[in-house]
Length: 138
Image (tube, rainbow, N blue to C red):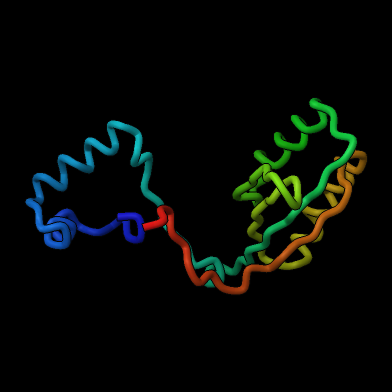
């Protein structure tokens, strides 16, 4: 199910060599135990006219209040789709979807303006093509 959440119960039962009723029961059990917490739709961003960037940010002189404000900004911004606080390397990894590179530059300029006292440095990368995307290492 991880590579294709739309796979039919019948197809799963064939692949696993169990009855469709057993597949349905097991899926419900996994949902009940919160092992399966949702199903996702994947979009081809290029066809929608969007580019996908990762923005890596390093912070310094961060107060608890400023970090709270930064996190709230990231959470509210409509173009920021994902963020991670990481150990090793950069402090934050932010994923952004924009129509143009200029749109990305505007977002970065806004972040730098609002959080200039805590932004130490940053760099960004354009995702050209995603070759592998899985939710489980199976």
